[in-house]
Each structure stands twice: as C-alpha cells, then as structure tokens.
Image (cartoon, rainbow, N blue to C red; front, side, top):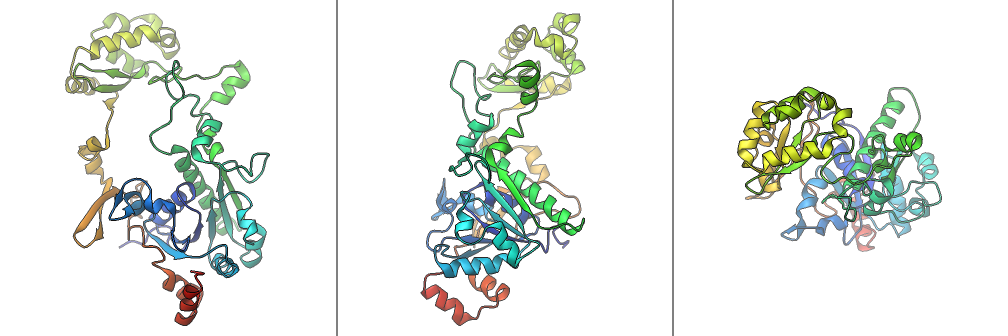
Length: 398
C-alpha cells in the first residue's frame, strides 16, 4: 500500500470540539501522526455531542479518526511539563483555546520555540490573537454574524438564518490546515523557520464573502438577504414542483439561459435581446423567475430533471441525508466508508477528501477511546517506563 502523503508529519492537537480538531482531522486523514491531548476524565466534549451509539457520539468516530488519544490534566504542573515535552517532539502544535490559555500553561509560542526552534504553532480562536476583541470567547455561531455570512443568509423579510451545520468552525479548520501546510513547506522546502499561524473564525468566514467589500468600498452597496437567489446572478434559484419537491436551477450562463427558456416553453424570453446577458437579466429577475416557476409547478420533479439534463441546463435536487446515501454519483465516487465500531457493528462515515490519485487519504482507525494511546505515546515518544506511567495515573495527571 502506498504511504499517505503526510507520513512523518507530527502534530500535537490541543483543543476540543470542532475548529482545531477539524484541522487535525484533515491532516490525520492524509497520514500525519496526530496526538490529541484530552481532559483526563471527560475527554473532548464532542465524544458525547449529538446522536450517540452505545454512549459515544457518532460524530466522534469520523472527527477523531486516525488520531492518538492521550490524557493530561493541564491544570497540573506535571501535566503541563509533559505537554511541553510532547511539543518538543512534533512539527505542529495546534490549539483552539481562548487566547492567553497556552501562555498561562507556559506553552506560548516563545515557550515552545525555546524547546523546539522549528515548531509551527497553529492557533485557532474566535477573533485571533491580537486586536481589541481577541480576549473574548469566540464561538462559531457568533463569528458567522461578525464575518458577514449571517447578514446575507435567509429571506429579506425575515430574520437572518444559519446553515444547519457549524460552517464557521469547519471553514476555520480548513484555513488552519492550509496555513499549517504552507508553514511546513516554507520551513522544510524554502529553508525558513517555524512560525505562528493565527486563524480567526470570523476572518475565515469573511474570506468567503466574495466581492462584498469592494462593492461597498467603491459603490456603497450592501449585499442583502435574497432567499434562494444569489444577488447579481440571474437566473439561479430554487423552484417548487408539482409534486411538492424543489429543483435547483442554474441558468445564468448566456447560452444556458437560452436553452433553459426554450425548455420552459418561453422562446420569447429566450430570444429577447434585453436578456441576452447577465447584466440585462438582472434587471428583469422577477419576471424571469416567475416564468421558470410557472413551468416547474406544472410538472413533477423527475420530468423537470430529465428535461433540463437533456437540455444541458445545470439542475439538481435538494437532498436530505437519506437521499444522499442512495445517490448513484456519491456511491460511484466512493464518498462513504464503512468502518467497524466493534466486531459485527459497522457504520458509514464520510471518506477522506479531497481525492488524490496517487496518495489518497483514508481511515486507519476510528475515533479512539479516551487515553487509548497513553502507553504508546508516553512510552515510545517520551521514553517513560511503565512504572512512571502508572505513577502518573495514580496521581491523576493522566
């Protein structure tokens, strides 16, 4: 079997729940050795979040896959010292605590650099490590509001809404993973030094906000909520069907628009010179959407889908997870992995993405039991004897 592409990269994960651990999960999926420090008795709260199976979160199984779980009481000076020893042995230290927490434990960047000059410290927080709000607790739901995405989400006559997932945390995790690997490349290929990767959740959201800043700066324009539509791009919306379903249609390409309107049996709108490009269509958005909706409401979803696919118009369903697991495209692409929880008990989890043709990622083991790797990590990496480890356990340091 081909080695995973991040084999040999060592990561110490200090943090919990989602933003930081999601970053580490991405790295672990491609072969990085991730050592996750957890609280001694309770572990990461994610272990018992959302839906449980035999007392463990089903989310945990994929979020913590390929990670090694060790336990440390970080309030205990001995626990802090062991964490510093671990930090001296790794390439990356990843944390997502409130700024100042790592410094309180004697594990700020300067402390870590003293024992590991090439260390890369990836820091994920709500507002970043500097600025007037840096010391505030920063949860993703708040950061989504500060970052701008909540303001543009929903319908104009209703309060802003959120996605049904914690998109702020996962976007921050993606930015953290990119920053970590960029810093590793600079250190190891360009002959650079270790450094701090400072990821703020609100900034990770803001980084996705397209042209909103430039539009406001030059034109004073504020993008507002537009429901299922996307401001300035026509037509692209979600339309009701006769059988009480919905179909998403993206007809904003000029030639696609013509094919769409002919399929909708509206050749007048297809050939109207005023509507030949997006700039013209934006001015008549309501008329165009009404024409499309009038057509979709006359037919069942399957009929609409077949007609639009035949016309090469981008379209698709609004899937629930029940629809997703049956979809032939997902299954053909191998987007689900079936893993064993214990003998005779399996579960589907998302595959490791993105797909690499020569060195794909994968699941070597699911989210570990609390402290499952204490003996391996403390013994092999730090050279502790069995008696030393047992003494630390008796003292409740681990």
